[in-house]
Image 1 (spheres, helix red, strand yellow):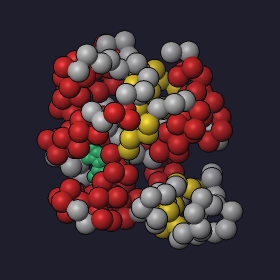
Image 2 (tube, rainbow, N blue to C red):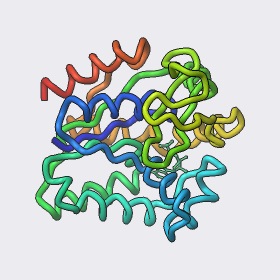
Image 3 (cartoon, helix red, strand yellow):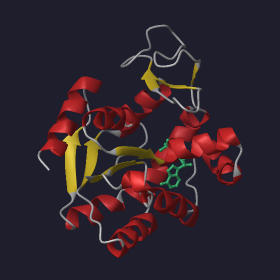
Image 4 (tube, rainbow, N blue to C red):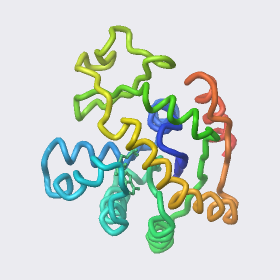
Length: 217
Ligand code: AMP
């Protein structure tokens, strides 16, 4: 199954994607996580994307698309993937479409959690992430707290607030989402791929709605 999880930053994509891959056999590909890992490793991609991540701005289309296309072309993606955080611009959506068409592959669905801007600001300011690059588990001080404050339940490392989750950067990311990513909703609706679901509720409730959509595919 080839799926896209669309939606604004802070709509719970990362958390929900973790649940989907535990249930359905697809690979979770988060461009944000790939980039944060590249930054932690200070590799060539990491050095290029670091300034964009710090400012909460989008990495240029050519670079993101090259990283994603390269990744989904590998054998372990043959059984399917769940893209989280990509595509985010019309240019990226078109480049992905062209690549899939050339490889005679098709998308099965584009999943969109419905969440308001005010909810997003609330969620992002309470979000805490694991500092271990291979873990990157996500928690929320109010909705999904770790068992020990500031410590990851998964690997025991320290949890931090991401630099781009600070209020000013969150506003910038939301503005970019409205300008660049919202047009993709219509793009995928016209292709009969869009599946919207209520993104408000506990992690469990939202997860069940999402899995129900995937399982009816
Ligand atoms: P995320 O964890 O998905 O919010 O991504 C963190 C950051 O990585 C974003 O604020 C961007 O700087 C960068 N990024 C991730 N995915 C993309 C994308 N599809 N296009 C451009 N930049 C991206």
